[in-house]
Image (cartoon, rainbow, N blue to C red; front, top):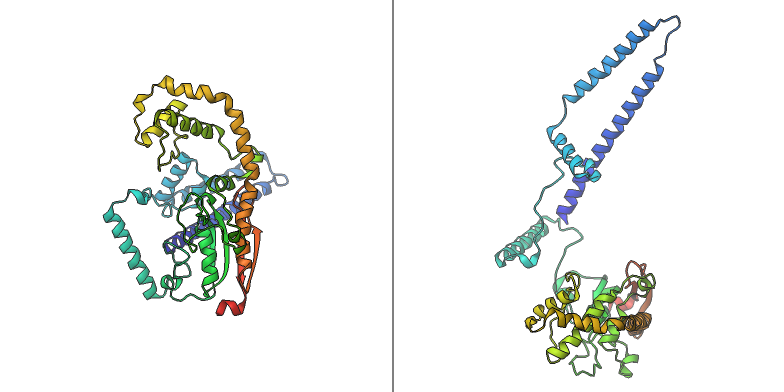
Length: 389
């Protein structure tokens, strides 16, 4: 954050300097234009005298230009050439020393263990030095695995009347945030926008997945828990769909869903209903055809794709192509029901807060659903007596 602020200040100074120089050049151009307008033939002045006067004025301007050209900064000249080559008007406001040709950032997954350890050590030393110098600032990043049982005071010692904000908290992180808000007196308010409903854990899952009451993400409210309410993964997947985008023809890649459905039939017929914990992932965007899609998926699952010829794979797509319209209608039905399922999950969280004493809460739309389909925020505020107890 400190490095970013330093670069922003540097850019600001360069921008102001450039703006001032541009304003000076503009004013000089206006003055020259006014001088040219003022040069008019004097009374009884012949044409030869007028030409001599204009030539003298021109020589003065040439002298100014030649003098100013002597002070051109080579770095600025090089920068101008770079700008003309790249066509980036943004760089025209930067001085040459601001443009930093730093190497591209290496993703953390590609770093060696030694490099990760070195960066971690440097980060800790930098934070310790900042605290020692008293320049730690307001913002300080901290990475931690957070659950409803996380002790915030162990992470942040001086925590009082804090507000916890979750912008698109994934899966169980959203309900965990609400539980922390209720249980921790140091938290005075909460504002959370959830997402990834398909990753929620459910207390009354009939599949038998164990889920402790403190860790379950749905249901939260006593009202739905008394009714043993259960959604299921398919319903929660539907809650992630975007009705507003679909109404404008956006948001659903039907061919991708069709490929995945036909692949499932192929797996059932040739790989004994093979099921893998691995997901297909983003294979569709890389595949050039259905045959390529199937082979990429099989290799991803470490299955033998040589047992099927290209013709056999293509025959599956041809056989089920006529049912594409049925699949489209089915997915449109899922999109239509999506707000109902999302509403059930959000209202369960709202009821959970309303069941708490001394908590005022509301469900508020914060964002445009076309830009952010998960646009509803759950806001809770403890009363002063409840926050300090």
